[in-house]
Length: 235
Ligand SMILES: Nc1ncnc2c1ncn2[C@@H]1O[C@H](COP(=O)(O)OP(=O)(O)O)[C@@H](O)[C@H]1O
Ligand SMILES: O=c1ccn([C@@H]2O[C@H](COP(=O)(O)OP(=O)(O)O)[C@@H](O)[C@H]2O)c(=O)[nH]1
Image (cartoon, rainbow, N blue to C red):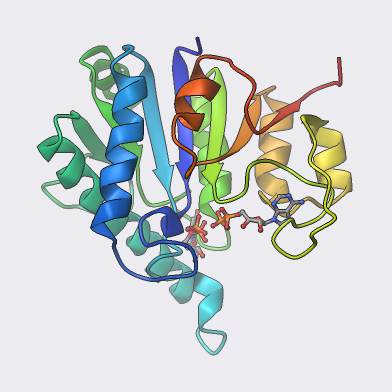
């Protein structure tokens, strides 16, 4: 079993694919899937996107950096939304971020993060990388390295990495494993190149899986075969 897990969730996991806002059924499902892994006493870090609220690129007329600031604020809104629901479902959760000063959000300090994990808290890293021009995939890569995760799980709406976008091409072929090098050179769009490059540099394995299939997350954490794994070399 992986003991230290960084879970990246797209914002749309909160709203339903292609939708905006919050869907309580989606949140309930998320809490159930997280409970299945948290009861094993793992260290669970989470990075959540904001696609259900706002992505910087969605308003092309805006100043890029300001649009991205709005996007980052969206990740804080999502994190607080999840925290409140998780706490009410019996999952101890803390939100940390460097971009806001709110009583419900704590600053990021490495020593404290270890304390939160040791006390059984899920830690939600909100605010992305704290910088415009990046995405929450890159934030997830950074946070996974910072928290010394054993695995970065990108939980999304496709069941792995394909040779082309499976939502657009019905003949797309799925990889069981793929190397960082291949993911970057083939320009695989499921995560951004920056995120793949950080994981490659620090040897952080990635699993891309379908979050909407029950027990997929649990199976990944148990090291059962699920989704696609990104690795240094094909064995
Ligand atoms: N080669 C590929 N393999 C798998 N998914 C891909 C590929 N290329 C593009 N995608 C798309 O990437 C999407 C997953 O990214 P998504 O979870 O939307 O990320 P984010 O919301 O963080 O941008 C899927 O919906 C899928 O359609
Ligand atoms: O480090 C970061 C992370 C996110 N964002 C902004 O926040 C939005 C939401 O993040 P993302 O697109 O990664 O969300 P997801 O698609 O995963 O829901 C992005 O579009 C950016 O505008 C940013 O500026 N810097």
